[in-house]
Length: 76
Image (cartoon, rainbow, N blue to C red):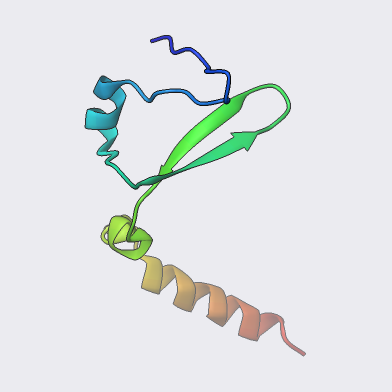
């Protein structure tokens, strides 16, 4: 998909991309520039809610407890 930059430096996010990623009026976009590429990342209005459930099945509590036990064994 192509867009054009206006004289004021503005562009349009294509409708298909807005629908696919749930981008709505008033949402924020973060622009990241690594020197070779530019990344545009939508930021959800409620970041905590957007992350809810993303770690499901990862055994995070067990992994944390194992790491703490390993730390205790390394302490003098």
